Length: 345
Ligand code: AMP
Image 1: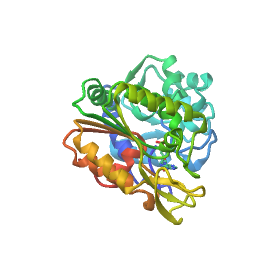
Image 2 (image 1 turned 180 degrees about the vertical axis):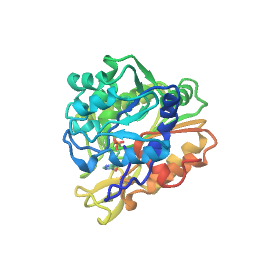
Image 3 (image 1 turned 90 degrees about the vertical axis):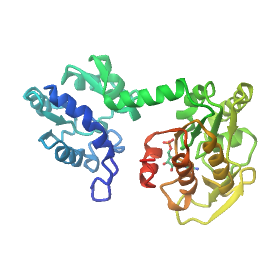
């Protein structure tokens, strides 16, 4: 799932290069390697804007060998089945975007079986999507013996050690838009961390739960009660839960919109919070610099728009500056760190 420009050129191939060690290992062992991936959100239709063809080409350059690619709208069709059964040891084939099939994101058994029918073993090397019950992740594993690749091994090792026996203080920073996705993560982290900072779009559901006016900011109405419970639970467990004390707001959801900073408690009705404010960024930064272990997932604001990227940049910089173990997970946060040129730190 690589970022592309308007012409379909791959603008950052880190996700492809990261998968090379596992692919190369399998090739060297004489496996016939059939790769599956998704790209963007074609919404279950064979929308050629999201074809994996450019990925096949880049992969072929990186591996310095032919990558068999059949742009099948059904992902698995007769031609693909024939090509798969005709593969020799060490051959590599890439399937078309698994999200061309509407069953993929619903973990439809028929599609899982079709995928499974092509191979003998399933190797999952996609840590970032391993939590999603989709046909190409969870579904296929029901029909084939499943193992993890080197990337997953590395992620589990780093994350596992850091979370099971962290250097303290152990600090977690969570952001992004979807609260519902992150509730189980918060519940889990509350048993482990000393400090939990919440920014990004999800913070407004928590601010609302504390009785703040949040204007037009993104809100998950259904989760307000749960957010209030989590705030209470943090208190009971002695976890320091930090929410934004100030925010950068806009009138419209675009980079050019009129902007203003407000304290979290005073967001006017027709404004929406799109980034954490300067005071919050500074507070979060100080906390990160004290951390023995810091785990970060999710941007602090709509960082894709430069005018609302400051909070995310500041957090990334603080993590880069930290002397503790810092772990950054999730596509957006990882992309942000790459984009700011801080990944090697
Ligand atoms: P997620 O997939 O839940 O990690 O959310 C990532 C997305 O959240 C990014 O595309 C951000 O632009 C978006 N986001 C972060 N902060 C906000 C905000 N305050 N309002 C709306 N969207 C946000």
